[in-house]
Length: 132
Ligand code: THU
Image 1 (cartoon, helix red, strand yellow):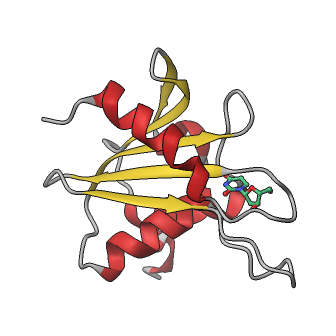
Image 2 (cartoon, helix red, strand yellow):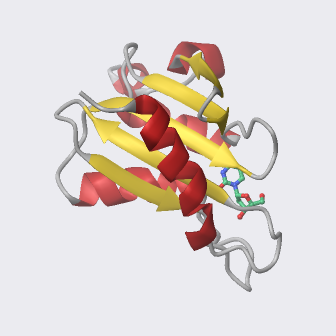
């Protein structure tokens, strides 16, 4: 059983590892698998801009690289009060998240909001569409 408040606190603290020398906007993510493992992600910017990877995709890439594809919770904490995932990250979430995956947008360990993928990506395109 994870301690949600503690994990939100750690997620916010890990913004210090964001590599955001261009935007100075830091994003930190914790991704919890259904088996209880936690993977971190931060945004990693690039001088050429387009190779920048968001914190969400960084965490998902780390987990998938470790053979994990079943996700229970994602916590997202950025430098705005409530940092919502960009469109590209929502699409990547749709590849791996199911209807039970909880998306937590955290302002602080006492102030956070829960969403489902359907809340954030209604009418999305997904793998089922390819079964033609
Ligand atoms: N960013 C994320 O990491 N996640 C989001 O959901 C929104 C944006 C990053 C990308 C870039 O490094 C910085 O925030 C400003 O866009």
